[in-house]
Image (cartoon, rainbow, N blue to C red; front, side, top):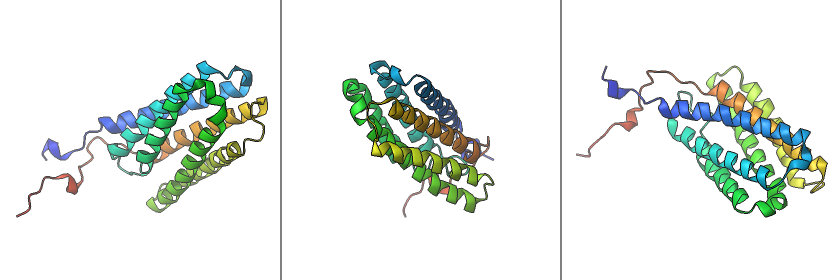
Length: 200
């Protein structure tokens, strides 16, 4: 069979590896904030902003990579652009970081959780046995995202730790999703619609 009929797996590997690495980064940042809630400042805002930008780019790459199952990345085009813009805003205005942190992070995590809940239902129909794991983690992440929207005690150590837990939940959810629902094979055929056609 012609070599050109197979899909390039580099974008898939890039997206999957990036998802894993950045999910771990989010988890570690959340753990750091949970343990050291008073350290939140411009430096942390810049690091979190860069992480969000990179995650947004990886999500967009994942959307266009067309892995075998096409479940984990199916909603990541718009969400990737959104998280990238929030990351840029975080870096651009670190002095006002705390003012919109709860709202921005809450919306992002809640939205991602809702998307992952829908994706887990698709995974169940697709026959992925661990769809329930994605569903469970998505619900947990969504709950913490929703709690951030209410912003119960702005500027307090409690809310900083809540942000940390929410970031940890987001990291674990994305890690489980990419390990469970992203399948890469070396000889994946291209879609039929990707061929070149001429109207007669």
